[in-house]
Every structure is written in structure tokens, then in C-alpha cells.
Image (cartoon, rainbow, N blue to C red; front, side, top):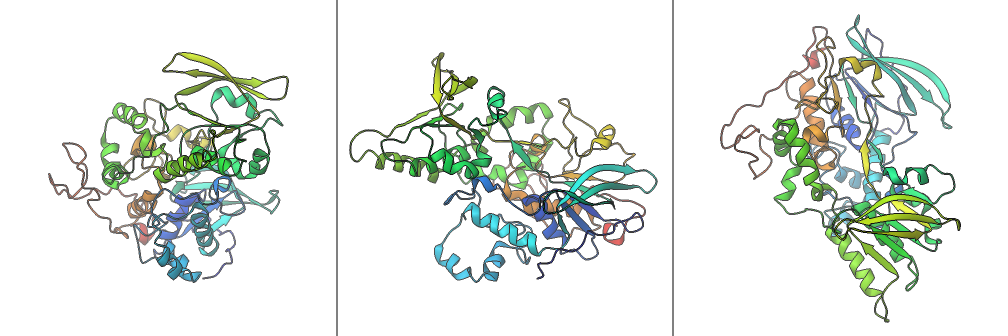
Length: 480
């Protein structure tokens, strides 16, 4: 496999791309890897960053991916692909050590290295390319993509335009900062960071007298554990605050994990919008809880620090909301807290804050602003997404726009989960082609979700799966 990236393709209206991807994170990288195995399918994927990186600020030593290694870019759709994690290990002569390690869950740093290996060898990926505008060309019945090619410093080097029959948006998520803390984050020099940037500030945080971690998900737990392990016993100077009523474990029972299957995604998509909107917040432990191993490691470390008498200088308090925040005269930070169950309020003084407050889907509207008049929306003004992960558009636009990790409101808690990456990529590719190129199992869960099954092959129906494929009179043979 060659490591040389091809030049930006000439994709004029006479020879357009079959599929153009915007953003190269794990999900679009999965799609690109599976698309590479389809003869005659012409694709290109564009990314503004100079190279692939997956949450670099959270690649803490020992931190693990919360899905098994089989949830790589391709295996659950095509285990014979050259882009599997096991083939990555083989290419690096590490297959037998991995076998003897008996690891089902790999470290984040290794998952990042695997994805970077794929991104360096897979053709059709164009890093350092900023998408400036996307339009629908009514004359050619194609999407127009204006892009700027950037040099190593991020300066514009070349401008170009590509045409494509279909688009896929994989622009990922962005760090979320709660409104009360936004003024602190926006003030230069104030030590308030999001956990997404943790490693960049780690040494400074370790040298700070008192640090407060806000947020009880996996990222907050990993940051708290790393700080705890690396600060002196008896002088830890750590607070861990969370809005949730408890430091709760991730739901990781075998039947609970069936919420991250295609069966559940189909069931969820078929529910009324109002029901879907009520469900997602109630299922927070499916995706916002803490891994059991991490919780155990935290308790073990806290217990170890009591062996010589006394308790560690740490405070772990759930059920707390940060109402407001500001700076004190001593250049410290003051958080105004409220405990919901007690109905009590207090002030909390600290020297630095790490916000493990999660991520939000990036708005896709800004990327495809010119197409906004054609997008059909739900009652909360979110783009409507069909069962094949396509934005529902005005029929005047003949090409499909697919989305990745921007459809939790339509497909449920599994939308951002790495375990569904290969399956979703296969669904997208199957909807583009005349015949399914990746046969998918009709049933994937023991649980039957609902009294009216929504998956093919269910006990109640064995109905053939509907395929609502994109079709155009001028489409190439691969697209029918």
C-alpha cells in the first residue's frame, strides 16, 4: 500500500464524483475505506486539518475505547477488508502480542494510531482542504463544492471546485461549554479548559494548587483519575463536581448494549418525533456513564491514599449545578453552586477548571447554507433524516446528502457510537448502488423493540427490507 496521497482530483461536471465527503473523522474514514472496495465508484473526501487525529487532547495513557476492537472502521460490514484493525496489527508485526494480551478493548491511543495508518494509506483522502461553499447546480443536476487547498501553515495555496452526485457530511462534534462558564473560557489567561484540550494543559494543571473537574462522564472520570494519580498524596487539591445525581456506571449489560444495534436504530427512527425527543435524555446512562473499570481504578487510587492515615484531599460531589462563575481578586475562580436535592447553595474557590461537559453536534446548516431552502425540518427546526441517513430535501434537488453523527434525534443513542460506523457506512453505500454491495444481517438483536417490529426478518413478519435508493437518469452504472 502506498503512503503517497493523490493530488486533488479533477471532478468537473463531465466526470463528477459519485460521492464527495466533507470531514474525515472515524465515520467518514469508515465510509471511504468501504467505498474503496467498490469498483467504478469515484469518491473524494475533504478535511481542513492537515492530518487525521482523533480527540488528541484525551489520549491519556491507559484510557480505553469503550467499544470492542471489532468496532473498527470496517469489520462489522466487511471483515475481509484490508483496513481492519487486525490487518493493521499484522502490518506492524504485532498480531501475536495482541493475541497473547487478550484485550477486547484497546487503548484510545492505539485506535488513533490505527485510524492514522488507514488515513495515510487509503487513496482519495484530501487533508488540508477547506470546503468553502456547497451548492446544487440545477443545470448539471450535481452538487458543486468550492474548496481551498491549504499549505502546512494553514494559508491558502490553491482554490478549486469539484462536482458530485452525492454528498456525505462527517464534520463531527465540537466541545460544549455550559453558558455560566462561557465568559471564563473566552477570557485570555484564565485557566478554564475543556477536557478536549486536557493533554495540552496537563503539566500546568499538575502544577496548579487546586483543580476542579466539572462533568461526570467518561472524560471527566479519566481526567480526574489522571490528575489524582499524578499529584502528591495528602495534597491532591481536587474537586469533582457533576450535575447528575450520582457518579453512575455506563450501562454495559449484554441486553443493554442492544440499544447500539441496527435493530434499535430502525425502531427508534420509526417512532414519533415527540417520543424520540423524550427518550434520548432518559437514556443518558447508555452514553454518558462511566466505565466500570475506570470507576474501580478511581476508588482503588483513593483507597490506596488512605493507607498511611487520613483521607486524600479530594471532594467528589454529584447533584451539583454551576449557576454562575467569575474571577476573584486573587486571580482565582469562583463557582456558584446549587445542590438540587438539598436546595442548598454555596461558593467554591478554585485555581483551575477542567470542563468535561461533553460535545455537541456541529451545525451542518453553516456548511451547506446555500442548500438551506431545500432542507425539510422537524418541529424543532432540525433537519429531517430518513432511514438511510439522508437529509430529507425538496424534490428539486435530485442528489442525496448523507449525514454521519448528526442524527441522534432521528436514529437514537447509537448515532455517535463507533460500533455502528461500519454498518452505517454500508447502509449509505448500499443505498447508492443498484444492488447491495455489503449484505447486512436482517436481525442484529435478541430484543424485539416494540409490538410492531421494524426490522426485516423479525418474528412477526419476515418482511423484505425496503431500499429507497438514489437514482438519476445520468448516473453511472454503479449507481444504477
